[in-house]
Length: 357
Ligand SMILES: Cc1cc2nc3c(=O)[nH]c(=O)nc-3n(C[C@H](O)[C@H](O)[C@H](O)COP(=O)(O)O)c2cc1C
Image (cartoon, rainbow, N blue to C red; front, side):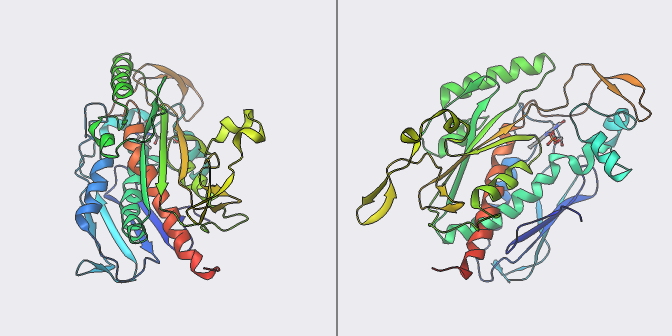
């Protein structure tokens, strides 16, 4: 069974390859009567699109969304929402050199082993171009979440060895930084590191942090569809993601229970927790506190240094890459993380109508 459908109550199927005609999606289960702000959806796509700054791939795509169905007079119809984002700046000739060889740590070898055929142009279906469809669908989900007062904010919290633990910043500071890091000092260091690394022909990884406010208690379906499990699957399905943690995550493994238990308190008649080491989810269900998680991205596999590899026949060879690539995916991945979080929360909001209110 193919794995191109995500969600249960709100389902997204995405389609398309990097250098094919278009990428796109069909979003089904989206409730009727929601105001659809097409400008907002386009803004979200603009945040992910390539060529935004000199630190990202020079591929120049306008990523203009065409909504094909499911929306009438700026309102959702309750019918499937289909949309297209055409691929315009395609240069398949840039990928002739990888037609017969496997790029290290990319998806070439595994796709070919699984399907026996692969679209080698720009990574085909394995390209992060597919995430444009997720961002568009996530924008629809955000319009629904907005009605419920749920707000998702992600930012760059680390690139290579530079990281920030900044908290309590203004969300508008994120977009002021070319790397989407609201900590000005860290942002400058990240940019410097990216520039140095690019000159060396190398690439970097990093982390994206995400904070979700306004989530009511009770979202999440134990035992297999726990909210943290669903977020984890959503994030791990993004290209180049290698790690996920909620709340204090891996840091908790080194702590004592007395240090990380979130003690319940009565705050103005509401049951709350004094701390939020759990990241807003307990027993797989949201507890009404802010949801917090972090996602780790590996360095971009395409580096501009010669690398050892093999061809389809197993002959050892040296790969010299070309084409247009990101030095680090993290800044462009921020809106992808937000989109996938929005799809998970919207799905669970819709699924929750069958549980006790
Ligand atoms: C926003 C974004 C942009 C990316 N840009 C590139 C790129 O320019 N070049 C590249 O080789 N990989 C890029 N990647 C990563 C590859 O898509 C990914 O490493 C590859 O498909 C192999 O999958 P895996 O790393 O999840 O195992 C990007 C990923 C994301 C999320």
